[in-house]
Length: 310
Image (cartoon, rainbow, N blue to C red):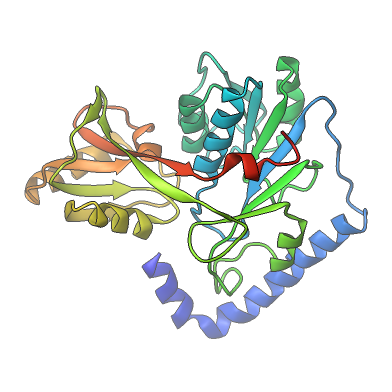
């Protein structure tokens, strides 16, 4: 994130005009949907809950989808989740989990999809075309369908549009906003982790785990990850009192190779770190001994969030 900000500042004379063109393009697309030129499809038989944001990068959408799915499941509802197939080998509609068994893992599906399948009892479908995924999973007769990263996917009419908001002023590529701020007017509920908004949320640490289950908090670690906001992950570990001996950040959704893991283990030894430490999103792509991950969840008032659709 720091490197991105650095290059955005250096290349500002070029990037800022491009960002204005980007905003104009996004706004034109939204306008055509608003006036009905582009049509939306109403899904019969299930309520559609969309979780999204207007900022590129990690803002907590996937943990929120998991939290909502688990809350609805606790109330006795059948829940399905549709994810996009970004960085997945299989782009067509695919049932990843029926809520009991997981049929596909990374890299056939992306890391977030596999993570959702592991942490919920939801029926999980993945597809580049989310509408085709919904059509595929309707045979399971879900009460609710959650669209992960669904704000910009306007082909489907939503019963609840939820947006996680963050502090950002400028549009891509000069800044990190990927959608017009006017899109927030379409949202039924706004969630934030910092500042003031309708519904405040908090990310909490559920503990440290390895391939065998829960383990003790390490005193020191060499940290690695491939997430949208690595700075926030690193700062959260420092707040927990972990001595970070070094770190390596890969691009978001990166698929690790055996060579990558061997290099990381060498760095751990050279830096005299107690463990290799990463996120659960990264661990699901590796799933081997010798690596510790942090599990998190989002705490908020789910009853208030889902008011009107539950």
